[in-house]
Image (cartoon, rainbow, N blue to C red):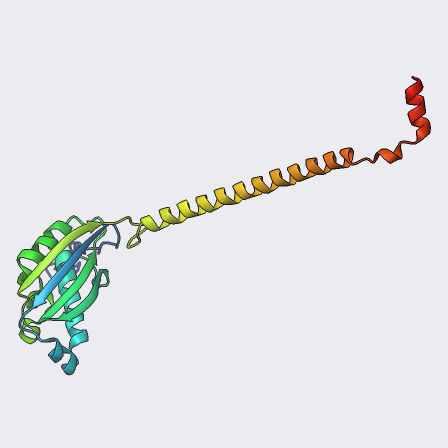
Length: 206
């Protein structure tokens, strides 16, 4: 009978898959973008009465963070004011190179930042009409702190220390002067009666 060859059972090797790339959010400190966004199609009274204010604020932060490429926790809403609805917020971007680009978008085209594709429901909350963005820099170790405060404290402490040293020096000089005056008084205050007549006579004969 003819010989038969069994088919190979080895499976083809799987090609390696590439690891997906992820964007790491920047840390806070260094560069802060102050933003102010106006929603003319919204009313503050409606947001409060409907109970949608927390959702509005969360979506605002998510959309801003997505465009700025940072974490939503780096977006801080300072206030939501009436007229119609004005949001004042700041984004801590560290040394984020997109800070300038985001500030320009928030100023010139806020509707491209807070839109449905970025997680902001414009159907429910309407699109922003105007905006403003401004960049400011801070120290990473003293983020949000006024550098004038420690300087003023240092100057005050130095002044008080100088006053204390001057007062102690004055008290020492005063005490030394009083001691010298007391010794002089003891010397000049010796009564003449303590010298007896015999001593006076001997002094005369000399």
